[in-house]
Length: 369
Image (cartoon, rainbow, N blue to C red; front, side, top):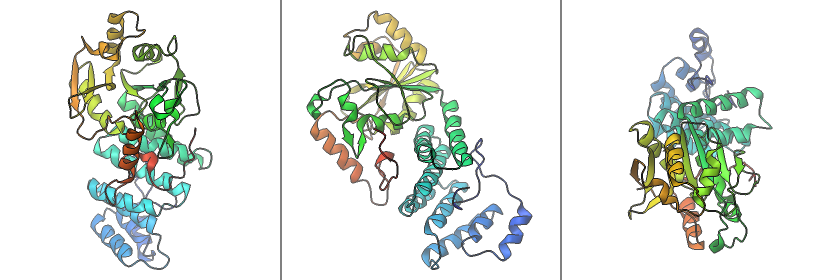
Protein backbone atom coordinates (compact mmCIF):
# COMPACT_ATOMS: atom_id res chain seq x y z
CA UNK A 1 0.00 0.00 0.00
CA UNK A 2 1.49 3.36 -1.01
CA UNK A 3 0.80 6.55 0.97
CA UNK A 4 -2.45 5.13 2.38
CA UNK A 5 -4.06 5.17 -1.07
CA UNK A 6 -6.28 2.17 -0.39
CA UNK A 7 -6.03 -1.42 0.71
CA UNK A 8 -3.12 -3.54 -0.50
CA UNK A 9 -3.40 -5.28 -3.87
CA UNK A 10 -2.36 -8.84 -4.56
CA UNK A 11 0.32 -8.50 -7.28
CA UNK A 12 -0.72 -11.77 -8.92
CA UNK A 13 -4.48 -11.27 -9.15
CA UNK A 14 -4.40 -7.45 -8.97
CA UNK A 15 -7.33 -7.78 -6.56
CA UNK A 16 -7.55 -6.45 -3.00
CA UNK A 17 -5.84 -8.47 -0.31
CA UNK A 18 -8.36 -9.78 2.18
CA UNK A 19 -7.74 -8.22 5.58
CA UNK A 20 -8.99 -9.36 8.97
CA UNK A 21 -12.66 -8.37 9.21
CA UNK A 22 -12.79 -8.38 13.02
CA UNK A 23 -9.75 -6.12 13.18
CA UNK A 24 -11.29 -3.70 10.69
CA UNK A 25 -14.59 -3.68 12.62
CA UNK A 26 -12.78 -2.90 15.86
CA UNK A 27 -10.74 -0.13 14.26
CA UNK A 28 -13.87 1.48 12.81
CA UNK A 29 -15.09 2.56 16.26
CA UNK A 30 -12.34 5.11 16.87
CA UNK A 31 -11.24 5.71 13.28
CA UNK A 32 -10.54 9.21 11.98
CA UNK A 33 -13.06 10.41 9.36
CA UNK A 34 -10.47 9.95 6.62
CA UNK A 35 -9.90 6.31 7.57
CA UNK A 36 -13.53 5.28 7.82
CA UNK A 37 -14.21 4.86 4.06
CA UNK A 38 -11.20 2.54 3.81
CA UNK A 39 -12.36 0.40 6.72
CA UNK A 40 -15.95 0.31 5.51
CA UNK A 41 -14.70 -0.80 2.12
CA UNK A 42 -12.67 -3.60 3.70
CA UNK A 43 -15.84 -4.70 5.49
CA UNK A 44 -17.73 -4.76 2.19
CA UNK A 45 -20.00 -1.86 3.14
CA UNK A 46 -19.32 -0.07 -0.14
CA UNK A 47 -22.37 2.23 -0.19
CA UNK A 48 -21.58 3.54 3.28
CA UNK A 49 -17.93 3.95 2.37
CA UNK A 50 -18.78 5.98 -0.73
CA UNK A 51 -21.24 8.15 1.17
CA UNK A 52 -18.59 9.01 3.75
CA UNK A 53 -15.96 9.63 1.08
CA UNK A 54 -18.30 11.99 -0.78
CA UNK A 55 -19.01 13.88 2.44
CA UNK A 56 -15.29 14.30 3.00
CA UNK A 57 -14.87 15.63 -0.53
CA UNK A 58 -17.84 17.99 -0.29
CA UNK A 59 -16.82 19.44 3.10
CA UNK A 60 -13.18 18.47 3.63
CA UNK A 61 -11.71 18.90 7.11
CA UNK A 62 -8.63 21.09 7.21
CA UNK A 63 -6.42 18.02 7.51
CA UNK A 64 -8.12 16.03 4.74
CA UNK A 65 -5.92 14.49 2.08
CA UNK A 66 -7.94 15.02 -1.09
CA UNK A 67 -5.74 12.73 -3.17
CA UNK A 68 -6.13 9.85 -0.78
CA UNK A 69 -9.92 10.22 -0.50
CA UNK A 70 -10.41 10.59 -4.26
CA UNK A 71 -8.28 7.56 -5.06
CA UNK A 72 -10.08 5.55 -2.41
CA UNK A 73 -13.48 6.60 -3.82
CA UNK A 74 -12.26 5.52 -7.27
CA UNK A 75 -11.24 2.14 -5.85
CA UNK A 76 -14.66 1.71 -4.23
CA UNK A 77 -16.38 2.41 -7.55
CA UNK A 78 -14.01 -0.01 -9.28
CA UNK A 79 -14.97 -2.71 -6.81
CA UNK A 80 -18.60 -2.08 -7.73
CA UNK A 81 -17.63 -2.41 -11.41
CA UNK A 82 -18.70 1.17 -12.02
CA UNK A 83 -15.61 1.88 -14.08
CA UNK A 84 -16.87 5.16 -15.54
CA UNK A 85 -17.24 6.68 -12.08
CA UNK A 86 -13.91 5.20 -11.05
CA UNK A 87 -12.28 6.95 -14.01
CA UNK A 88 -13.83 10.28 -13.01
CA UNK A 89 -12.45 10.04 -9.47
CA UNK A 90 -9.01 8.96 -10.72
CA UNK A 91 -8.85 11.97 -13.02
CA UNK A 92 -9.68 14.24 -10.09
CA UNK A 93 -7.10 12.46 -7.93
CA UNK A 94 -4.40 13.17 -10.53
CA UNK A 95 -4.72 16.91 -9.85
CA UNK A 96 -3.61 16.27 -6.26
CA UNK A 97 -0.86 13.78 -7.13
CA UNK A 98 1.94 16.27 -6.56
CA UNK A 99 4.77 13.85 -5.84
CA UNK A 100 6.43 11.18 -7.93
CA UNK A 101 5.23 8.48 -5.54
CA UNK A 102 1.62 9.63 -5.70
CA UNK A 103 1.70 9.86 -9.47
CA UNK A 104 3.05 6.31 -9.72
CA UNK A 105 0.36 5.06 -7.36
CA UNK A 106 -2.38 6.84 -9.31
CA UNK A 107 -1.09 5.40 -12.57
CA UNK A 108 -1.13 1.90 -11.10
CA UNK A 109 -4.77 2.35 -10.08
CA UNK A 110 -5.65 3.63 -13.56
CA UNK A 111 -3.95 0.58 -15.03
CA UNK A 112 -6.01 -1.67 -12.77
CA UNK A 113 -9.21 -0.04 -14.06
CA UNK A 114 -8.18 -0.65 -17.67
CA UNK A 115 -7.31 -4.22 -16.71
CA UNK A 116 -10.80 -4.69 -15.30
CA UNK A 117 -12.35 -3.22 -18.46
CA UNK A 118 -10.52 -5.83 -20.57
CA UNK A 119 -8.18 -3.45 -22.39
CA UNK A 120 -4.88 -5.02 -21.40
CA UNK A 121 -2.89 -2.80 -23.74
CA UNK A 122 -3.97 0.40 -21.99
CA UNK A 123 -3.45 -1.30 -18.63
CA UNK A 124 0.12 -2.11 -19.63
CA UNK A 125 0.80 1.51 -20.60
CA UNK A 126 -0.07 2.74 -17.14
CA UNK A 127 1.78 -0.06 -15.36
CA UNK A 128 4.83 0.74 -17.51
CA UNK A 129 4.75 4.41 -16.53
CA UNK A 130 4.25 3.56 -12.86
CA UNK A 131 7.18 1.15 -12.98
CA UNK A 132 9.43 3.67 -14.73
CA UNK A 133 8.66 6.21 -12.02
CA UNK A 134 9.19 3.77 -9.15
CA UNK A 135 12.50 2.32 -10.26
CA UNK A 136 15.38 3.98 -8.53
CA UNK A 137 13.47 5.49 -5.62
CA UNK A 138 10.57 3.33 -4.41
CA UNK A 139 10.69 0.49 -1.92
CA UNK A 140 11.31 -3.01 -3.34
CA UNK A 141 7.77 -4.21 -2.54
CA UNK A 142 6.18 -1.38 -4.58
CA UNK A 143 8.48 -2.02 -7.51
CA UNK A 144 7.83 -5.76 -7.36
CA UNK A 145 4.06 -5.18 -7.28
CA UNK A 146 4.17 -3.13 -10.48
CA UNK A 147 6.61 -5.51 -12.16
CA UNK A 148 4.28 -8.41 -11.45
CA UNK A 149 1.25 -6.50 -12.69
CA UNK A 150 3.01 -5.68 -15.97
CA UNK A 151 4.39 -9.20 -16.36
CA UNK A 152 0.93 -10.66 -15.80
CA UNK A 153 -0.57 -8.52 -18.55
CA UNK A 154 2.21 -9.39 -20.97
CA UNK A 155 1.83 -13.11 -20.27
CA UNK A 156 -1.85 -12.89 -21.16
CA UNK A 157 -1.27 -10.92 -24.36
CA UNK A 158 1.48 -13.05 -25.92
CA UNK A 159 2.66 -10.12 -28.02
CA UNK A 160 5.90 -8.60 -29.28
CA UNK A 161 6.07 -5.28 -31.13
CA UNK A 162 8.12 -3.94 -34.02
CA UNK A 163 8.40 -0.14 -34.14
CA UNK A 164 9.83 1.25 -37.37
CA UNK A 165 11.71 4.39 -36.39
CA UNK A 166 14.50 4.78 -38.92
CA UNK A 167 12.99 7.62 -40.94
CA UNK A 168 14.66 10.96 -41.38
CA UNK A 169 11.52 13.09 -41.04
CA UNK A 170 12.78 15.52 -43.67
CA UNK A 171 9.51 17.47 -43.75
CA UNK A 172 9.88 17.97 -40.00
CA UNK A 173 13.46 19.18 -40.30
CA UNK A 174 15.25 15.86 -39.79
CA UNK A 175 18.31 14.94 -41.82
CA UNK A 176 19.80 11.68 -40.56
CA UNK A 177 18.31 8.21 -40.38
CA UNK A 178 16.30 7.91 -37.18
CA UNK A 179 15.97 11.66 -36.69
CA UNK A 180 12.19 11.54 -36.91
CA UNK A 181 11.97 9.30 -33.82
CA UNK A 182 13.53 12.08 -31.74
CA UNK A 183 11.23 14.91 -32.86
CA UNK A 184 9.46 16.10 -29.69
CA UNK A 185 5.73 15.82 -29.18
CA UNK A 186 4.32 17.12 -25.89
CA UNK A 187 7.90 17.17 -24.60
CA UNK A 188 8.70 13.56 -25.49
CA UNK A 189 10.41 11.95 -28.49
CA UNK A 190 7.77 10.94 -31.01
CA UNK A 191 8.74 7.26 -31.05
CA UNK A 192 8.50 7.08 -27.24
CA UNK A 193 4.75 7.62 -27.51
CA UNK A 194 4.58 4.52 -29.71
CA UNK A 195 6.86 2.50 -27.45
CA UNK A 196 4.63 3.35 -24.50
CA UNK A 197 1.52 2.38 -26.49
CA UNK A 198 3.16 -1.02 -27.06
CA UNK A 199 3.90 -1.59 -23.36
CA UNK A 200 1.93 -4.84 -23.47
CA UNK A 201 4.59 -6.35 -25.71
CA UNK A 202 7.02 -8.71 -24.01
CA UNK A 203 9.75 -7.37 -26.30
CA UNK A 204 9.66 -4.07 -28.17
CA UNK A 205 12.02 -3.99 -31.13
CA UNK A 206 12.81 -0.56 -32.51
CA UNK A 207 14.27 -0.55 -36.00
CA UNK A 208 16.57 2.44 -36.20
CA UNK A 209 19.64 3.94 -34.55
CA UNK A 210 20.25 3.00 -30.94
CA UNK A 211 19.28 5.64 -28.37
CA UNK A 212 18.10 5.98 -24.79
CA UNK A 213 14.37 5.27 -25.07
CA UNK A 214 11.34 4.69 -22.91
CA UNK A 215 10.89 1.05 -21.98
CA UNK A 216 14.43 0.03 -22.97
CA UNK A 217 13.56 -1.53 -26.33
CA UNK A 218 15.79 -3.89 -28.29
CA UNK A 219 17.36 -2.17 -31.32
CA UNK A 220 18.17 -3.48 -34.76
CA UNK A 221 18.77 -2.07 -38.23
CA UNK A 222 17.86 -3.40 -41.65
CA UNK A 223 20.68 -4.18 -44.08
CA UNK A 224 21.48 -2.06 -45.91
CA UNK A 225 20.22 0.81 -43.76
CA UNK A 226 17.39 2.61 -45.51
CA UNK A 227 16.36 -0.48 -47.50
CA UNK A 228 12.69 0.13 -46.82
CA UNK A 229 9.97 -0.93 -44.41
CA UNK A 230 9.74 -4.58 -45.51
CA UNK A 231 13.47 -5.01 -44.98
CA UNK A 232 13.11 -3.34 -41.58
CA UNK A 233 10.28 -5.70 -40.60
CA UNK A 234 12.32 -8.71 -41.76
CA UNK A 235 15.29 -7.63 -39.64
CA UNK A 236 13.14 -7.18 -36.54
CA UNK A 237 11.12 -10.35 -37.01
CA UNK A 238 14.21 -12.44 -36.24
CA UNK A 239 13.95 -11.13 -32.67
CA UNK A 240 10.23 -11.89 -32.22
CA UNK A 241 9.33 -14.81 -29.94
CA UNK A 242 5.66 -14.29 -29.08
CA UNK A 243 2.74 -15.73 -31.09
CA UNK A 244 1.55 -12.23 -32.07
CA UNK A 245 3.46 -9.19 -33.20
CA UNK A 246 2.38 -5.58 -33.63
CA UNK A 247 3.89 -3.81 -36.65
CA UNK A 248 3.84 -0.07 -36.01
CA UNK A 249 5.25 3.07 -37.55
CA UNK A 250 7.21 5.17 -35.10
CA UNK A 251 5.06 8.26 -35.71
CA UNK A 252 1.67 7.08 -34.40
CA UNK A 253 1.33 8.73 -30.97
CA UNK A 254 -2.33 7.71 -30.54
CA UNK A 255 -2.07 4.08 -31.65
CA UNK A 256 -2.57 2.65 -28.14
CA UNK A 257 -6.35 2.75 -28.40
CA UNK A 258 -6.35 0.53 -31.49
CA UNK A 259 -4.16 -2.34 -30.32
CA UNK A 260 -6.90 -4.27 -28.54
CA UNK A 261 -9.33 -4.43 -31.52
CA UNK A 262 -6.44 -5.20 -33.87
CA UNK A 263 -5.26 -8.07 -31.68
CA UNK A 264 -8.77 -9.50 -31.47
CA UNK A 265 -8.72 -10.04 -35.23
CA UNK A 266 -6.02 -12.64 -34.58
CA UNK A 267 -6.94 -13.99 -31.16
CA UNK A 268 -10.74 -14.08 -31.48
CA UNK A 269 -11.41 -14.42 -35.19
CA UNK A 270 -8.30 -16.31 -36.26
CA UNK A 271 -7.23 -13.99 -39.06
CA UNK A 272 -3.63 -13.56 -40.17
CA UNK A 273 -3.66 -9.89 -39.20
CA UNK A 274 -5.76 -6.94 -38.15
CA UNK A 275 -5.11 -3.77 -40.15
CA UNK A 276 -6.25 -0.26 -39.27
CA UNK A 277 -8.21 1.65 -41.94
CA UNK A 278 -9.08 5.32 -41.59
CA UNK A 279 -12.51 6.76 -42.24
CA UNK A 280 -11.43 7.73 -45.76
CA UNK A 281 -10.73 4.07 -46.56
CA UNK A 282 -6.92 4.37 -46.46
CA UNK A 283 -5.16 1.33 -45.02
CA UNK A 284 -2.23 2.03 -42.72
CA UNK A 285 0.04 -0.93 -43.35
CA UNK A 286 2.21 0.06 -40.40
CA UNK A 287 -0.68 0.00 -37.91
CA UNK A 288 -1.33 -3.72 -37.64
CA UNK A 289 -1.18 -6.77 -35.41
CA UNK A 290 -0.12 -10.05 -37.05
CA UNK A 291 -0.06 -13.70 -36.14
CA UNK A 292 3.71 -14.10 -36.07
CA UNK A 293 3.87 -17.22 -38.22
CA UNK A 294 1.57 -15.62 -40.79
CA UNK A 295 3.94 -12.66 -41.02
CA UNK A 296 6.92 -15.00 -41.43
CA UNK A 297 5.07 -16.76 -44.24
CA UNK A 298 4.20 -13.46 -45.93
CA UNK A 299 7.85 -12.41 -45.86
CA UNK A 300 8.97 -15.77 -47.22
CA UNK A 301 6.59 -15.41 -50.18
CA UNK A 302 8.17 -12.10 -51.12
CA UNK A 303 11.77 -13.27 -51.32
CA UNK A 304 14.26 -10.45 -50.96
CA UNK A 305 12.60 -7.63 -48.98
CA UNK A 306 14.84 -4.77 -50.10
CA UNK A 307 12.93 -1.86 -51.59
CA UNK A 308 9.51 -3.53 -51.54
CA UNK A 309 6.37 -1.55 -50.61
CA UNK A 310 4.94 -2.66 -47.28
CA UNK A 311 1.51 -3.33 -48.80
CA UNK A 312 3.06 -6.31 -50.60
CA UNK A 313 3.09 -8.19 -47.29
CA UNK A 314 -0.69 -8.10 -47.17
CA UNK A 315 -1.55 -9.15 -50.72
CA UNK A 316 -2.06 -12.88 -50.05
CA UNK A 317 -2.74 -12.76 -46.32
CA UNK A 318 -6.09 -13.21 -44.58
CA UNK A 319 -6.60 -9.66 -43.33
CA UNK A 320 -9.38 -8.11 -41.28
CA UNK A 321 -9.67 -4.37 -41.69
CA UNK A 322 -10.57 -2.43 -38.53
CA UNK A 323 -12.23 0.99 -38.93
CA UNK A 324 -10.26 3.74 -37.23
CA UNK A 325 -13.12 5.93 -35.98
CA UNK A 326 -10.94 7.50 -33.25
CA UNK A 327 -8.03 8.48 -35.54
CA UNK A 328 -5.64 6.20 -33.67
CA UNK A 329 -3.57 5.92 -36.86
CA UNK A 330 -3.07 9.67 -37.22
CA UNK A 331 0.61 10.04 -38.07
CA UNK A 332 3.04 12.92 -37.78
CA UNK A 333 4.69 13.58 -41.13
CA UNK A 334 4.57 17.36 -41.47
CA UNK A 335 4.68 20.45 -39.24
CA UNK A 336 0.90 20.70 -39.71
CA UNK A 337 0.48 17.10 -38.49
CA UNK A 338 2.61 17.87 -35.47
CA UNK A 339 0.55 20.97 -34.62
CA UNK A 340 -2.66 18.95 -34.92
CA UNK A 341 -1.25 16.25 -32.63
CA UNK A 342 -0.21 18.84 -30.04
CA UNK A 343 -3.68 20.41 -30.21
CA UNK A 344 -5.34 17.02 -29.88
CA UNK A 345 -3.33 16.34 -26.73
CA UNK A 346 -3.88 19.76 -25.17
CA UNK A 347 -7.56 20.19 -26.08
CA UNK A 348 -8.89 16.97 -24.59
CA UNK A 349 -12.41 16.98 -23.16
CA UNK A 350 -12.79 19.04 -19.97
CA UNK A 351 -12.05 16.96 -16.89
CA UNK A 352 -10.41 14.22 -18.95
CA UNK A 353 -6.75 13.35 -19.17
CA UNK A 354 -4.97 13.41 -22.55
CA UNK A 355 -5.13 10.40 -24.88
CA UNK A 356 -1.37 9.99 -24.69
CA UNK A 357 -0.34 9.26 -21.08
CA UNK A 358 3.05 10.89 -21.66
CA UNK A 359 1.21 14.20 -22.01
CA UNK A 360 -0.58 14.07 -18.66
CA UNK A 361 -0.04 17.37 -16.81
CA UNK A 362 2.81 17.54 -14.29
CA UNK A 363 3.97 14.01 -15.05
CA UNK A 364 7.13 13.69 -12.94
CA UNK A 365 8.91 11.40 -15.35
CA UNK A 366 12.07 12.83 -16.83
CA UNK A 367 12.26 12.45 -20.60
CA UNK A 368 14.61 9.54 -21.19
CA UNK A 369 16.00 10.75 -24.49
